[in-house]
Image (tube, rainbow, N blue to C red; front, side):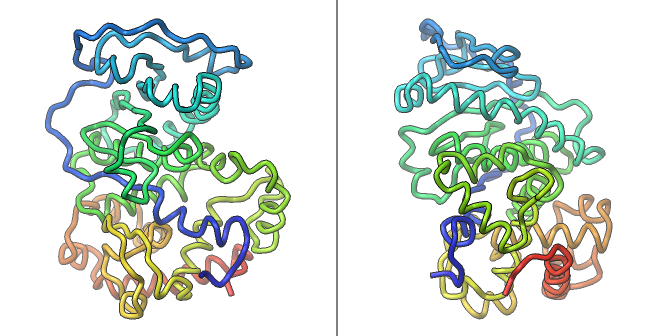
Length: 353
């Protein structure tokens, strides 16, 4: 199918283009704060007990009974400085208490640091005060979302996580960036090009994204040596931290797209639909045709070449407004980016041919 083999470059080739999704609507002018969700008359049941080893996250963020907002569906919650996590009863039953809470707290070990990084990366373009975001686990009973190649979605001021904890780890920061740029910014990001490009750029290339690192090894303990060997072979192994460098991997994925590796294949584009990468798209894509990794790296190019302020100040611009702001057509900018990305990969020592 793709011109390479391996854990990353074959079985995970579409991770950076299909896993992240969301930002499907304009932000509301008013909203209920995350910590003050509307009450219901459904009583919450007793909070579960877990016997998993204590961690810093478990001690800092205990499980509470949810006595208000959608308590029948989400009978428990966990409060952190950046979020209120609503824990679904069906998901706990699906995974079992031990596995469910082990997964939750594995993510909570890193999520707060990641969220703080995102707020810092967007400082000056988002509100100074950022309220906690609502996060729902929705691993069960969402056939409508199962039709999309997505692991998470942001809408109505809420992040919903689908499929499981590993997949949630991969997209969590991307969805949090949607929250910041849609609900905590004025102007907010407008249109799928800006929403998804900024979301992917900040979460994949600006921030350390500790939670996303877990995705590539979660449940793959028997493949760790293969993952390491492949990362070393293609140049994205971090020898100092002894891990696959997912930032370099984003550039590598983008270059594979630019090289034509997915021409003739379906992919989920930032326009929020599955399309075939035709040769026409390959030669001169429209904004909404970009793959997620491709969009992230193009945003990195624009920031480097034209400056962060020009880019972020125009993250609500139309195609014509973008041309006015940058003095070039999108096609011209795209082909500049393509040359730049190849240079970046060469400088990083990535094997792209």
